[in-house]
Length: 252
Ligand SMILES: [Zn+2]
Image: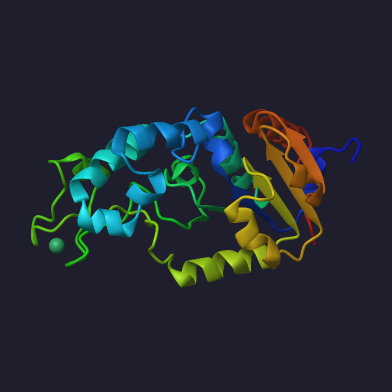
């Protein structure tokens, strides 16, 4: 792999697409229920695994327990997007980054200012809806009562996230896959090459370069062309500094 300039690679890209993973949130101090230790603690606390509780079946049969979990393990984790997300938004503004695809639930990319974001599994802020009449409720409403009920129908409001056992909107996946197939460079942030989001989309990639930045190395990283380890915010921050000093040449 040797020495390379991330700024060079990214600025030469004519269609950069980014996949963001869990470790990017962890960098901002957002814990995840998929974390081994957290999963164990959750099982002790609720008597069920995170996968069982965060499912469509659990939501429909035990809404009170579901919402206890959803509030304390998911909503309580909501934080402002950190520097790495801000850097992504800045990279999009330069015109280099075309879109971001994620399965994380906190809408951090959009809240940091990214315009083109595929939140494949939805997010906690948007589309909290009544499954019967479709009425939309804001995130704060999800904290009301033991279970937030639709004011019209009286049924539990469904959070704006995709639960296990539910289908991800197929059109959304198709559009995201289409973006990946157009990319000449794929930027993978906070994920190794074996996570579900990478496995889901890597097959559509027909470009030249895969750049991966993650907290720590993984045996499958050799499938990427360039790897960097450490804080994503620092690497992207440096890239933006370099781009400022040496404006991107117009491609024609
Ligand atoms: Zn309703």
